[in-house]
Amino acid sequence: MSIAAPANGVLSRAGTQPSARIVSALEVLLVYAGVLLYIWRWQFSYPRLWIVFLAIMVLSHLARGERPRDLGLTFAGLRANAETVLPLVLAIYLPLVVYGFARHLLVLLVPGKASLVWFTNYLSWCAAQQYLAQSYFHRRLMSVIENPHRRSLVVGLMFGATHIPNPILMVVTTLAGFVFAEVFTRHRNIWPLALAQAAGGFLIAAISPPSLIRNMRVGPGYYFYRLKH
Image (cartoon, rainbow, N blue to C red; front, side):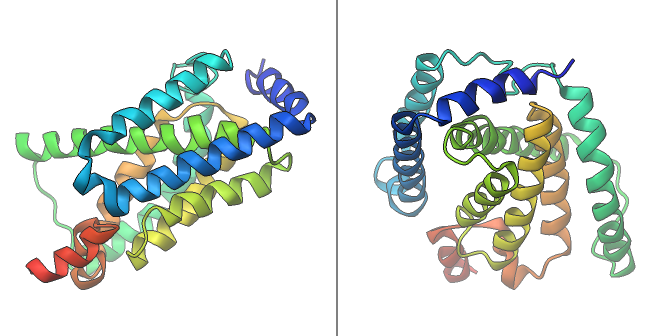
């Protein structure tokens, strides 16, 4: 029995009311604008402001009666999500792995404590991004955009725009954001998506030209990285 259908049905009925659409659309626009402003300005002047954004999103979930299961934060739907997204990303990642070894950009090493800590931290960051993109923005857009494929496209564009001006990450995250949104529509769980993003981010960072990827920096940090190196 799918858990996505009842939730989508509720959101679809809510979306038929113009007032609900307007409220959700304004919420998405305001919070997304705040995220972009934080990336480009507020992270330097108000570094703890992200706590305010998180509080706003949590209050939004509570006001709508959304449960962790609805947001894809539990184990419900995990297997179905993984069975959908992991074979797909493996088909994409394997050629990148072959390319990386062929160009001597990847080498086999026994992972040490430092590398495991780094990957764990990065995986946590990817989970936070998937929560923001799927559990929050995607959920809100379900009340605004009825067509699931158009909605996934908007999610992908929003995800990619947060990685401006990094040219490689902009392209990769826009495509990945669309694919992940398509999977999330069918199977409400973010954890396999976070794992796929973490593995993909590692590969992209390893095989991309350093002059373009710039240690995966986005926003002003992309330009500051050039000045420091």
